[in-house]
Structures are given as C-alpha cells and as structure tokens.
Amino acid sequence: MNTYHAPHFDPTVDELETLKQLEMGKLVNTPQALKEHLSGRLYERGYIGKNSTGQLTITDTGRALIRRQDN
Image 1 (cartoon, rainbow, N blue to C red):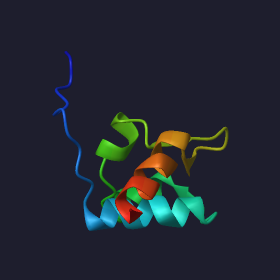
Image 2 (image 1 turned 120 degrees about the vertical axis):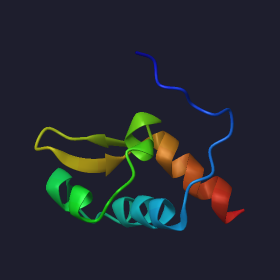
Image 3 (image 1 turned 30 degrees about the horizontal axis):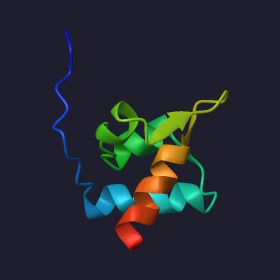
C-alpha cells in the first residue's frame, strides 16, 4: 500500500520544535517520541532518521526545512 503525500508539507509547531531539538544535539529515542506523540510525518518524509542505537536524528532534509521556516 502506498502512502499519499500531499504536494506541500506544513510542519506543526511541535514538529519544528522537535527538529530544532534534534539539530541542537538532544537525543530522542523512539519510546520517548511515542510518549510525546511525535508525528510519524517527519520520519515518513525523511526529515528524521534513526541511528544505529535506535535514537532519532535529524537529516539534511530536516535541517533544510528548519532553515526554510526561519526565513
């Protein structure tokens, strides 16, 4: 089954805050993300990924999204 992605993505305030926290080096693991109701949209669209220990990390695409929102 293919997941539909709208042509334009507008991150929520919480999603942007999560990306900024990851960019600053705050480690977020999957259980913590689920507890905080982190949107799967960030992962599905490639703005965050997982490292070898299962912690969420920001991708270059996620950094570009933050820069675009700050302008």
